[in-house]
Amino acid sequence: MNQLNIRFGREEDLEAIREIHNYFVRETSVTFEMEEASMENRRIWFEQFDETGIHQLLVAEQDDCLAGYSASLRFHERPAYAPSVMTSVYLHPDQTGKGIGRELYRALLESLEKTGKVHRAYGLVVIPNPASERLHKKLGFREAGLLEEAGFKLGRYHSVRIYERLMG
Ligand SMILES: CC(C)(COP(=O)(O)OP(=O)(O)OC[C@H]1O[C@@H](n2cnc3c(N)ncnc32)[C@H](O)[C@@H]1OP(=O)(O)O)[C@@H](O)C(=O)NCCC(=O)NCCS
Image (tube, rainbow, N blue to C red; front, side, top):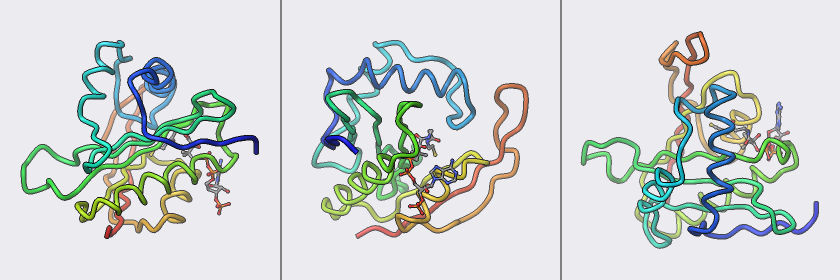
């Protein structure tokens, strides 16, 4: 693999992040987002991140191109869920299957552990998604449940497996 650089996401990454995000919104059910995001939407989305907080954005650069991003978001709006985060990772479709997802997601989890403020991380995987399920298990998540046919996108229902990781 050529030079892989993992770092915190910056505002100037948002256009490349938006392109990856919109591809998965438009073409797949791996995300339950249904509308492609504008740049304004991504700028507002970016405001939630803080390099020393529990909501972080990391990106992977391969040969100076943005190969993917990984983020921890608020898990649920109700305040008692505050020590839990929802984590996810998305690579550019040309960059999958080369180990980048593993490096990037691992870096996010390590960075979150360093804060000492996250109690649980949850990954919600729309199934089937063998690469994502394998990745979650590899990085210490366990299966915590199945939401059967919880979402409807691209003309059919989709089930979601909950992956849970103890942190800190
Ligand atoms: C899911 C995703 C982040 C995984 O990253 P990746 O770089 O492609 O995966 P890696 O090369 O790091 O491989 C991770 C593990 O999954 C396995 N794997 C990769 N692709 C696979 C596939 N198509 N089928 C089965 N297993 C697969 C790898 O062998 C590896 O397991 P191992 O360490 O035991 O060998 C990436 O494929 C992606 O962005 N997919 C589209 C978006 C998405 O689904 N995001 C997750 C939303 S929950």
